[in-house]
Image (cartoon, helix red, strand yellow):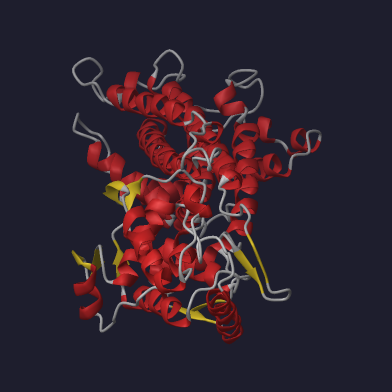
Length: 506
């Protein structure tokens, strides 16, 4: 059970709820704040105070007064009109991450949500009733308005939902789970959709996968170094100390541990004086990628526990203040940075792959690792696929955060495009996993030629794990299924856990 209180939710908790189906509860202290904040909203309506989105319209309509009698209709109209996102539905794990993040933000007690609405949101999570949220349509400012409106529709008993693996009308899904929809009261519609939870949910899940990739990439690179008879001196501790980036030092230490006991690595001057950069500079490049991950983790930790509603209700003073915490610029920058970092992880992986399959660079390995070069093409076209993926990543890495298109009749004249950035980052991570998968399959093939029994104990574990899934390429065959299965194992961290029985990869 994950207990949310608006302030202490961790990334690991989000992953448990999103991916492992962990149930959620609101802390007693949070319920008390929610009740007090809701009472303040009721007071605003009774006193006919002028408050954005409560007694006024939205966006450009902020100066249009709304009578207390229309307060509930205003909220329903808001959700129905804003629920116009398009495209493929977000995956279930993303939908669950959005739900727990929104529940956590509402539990902070600044939004004015009612206990009944927040309770239904949590009940939907715990009963497995998930909104169907189309993936496209958010500008990343004023919150993720369009996609979050599809979440709000579910609570109203409208739109679509998934329950027990089936897509159906939301009203039907709620009924099957023994739940009933709510009627949104003053400010509740706005409270549900003003926020950065869609970009943050995608970002959190993408970050978790990226972090696993960064760790397993060190193991894959170590095996490639071995099969190419790489020079281990480049990972010497002294080199890292005189350029004291902590992340670079961690990667170099990983490589030293992973390569300990290898009978394939060489020493400086034994076969060659220096390796190419894709081998020699692994600590510097992989370390820099980890610096990106450190930055992204810091921003996600803040955003996960942030109040991103507008207006915000401050119980200590009774003030209701309109501001801009819904603006997604911090996450937009973080997601653009993340996709650049993971793109570079794939770039250097593809270059190592090229050295293994290129007979002029591999130091004696057969061309394209083919058993019968000429008659069979081996991994020739697998390298093409990797090249295509890294090229696509370069297009996806165009920064979304530098774009802005004014909306709402120029009232909302600067937006973040943070959700686009997060979605592109997710695509980059998927592509990077496939590139690393191809490198790993090639490294295992090269190990067959160099002698897999000469691998270091740690990399030998990974080799044996791969061989449980990917058979040696004794003759040409389609590698699509092998690549996809390998990429999934790299993303979910299962193979990394197996390797860590031999060496703890930091």
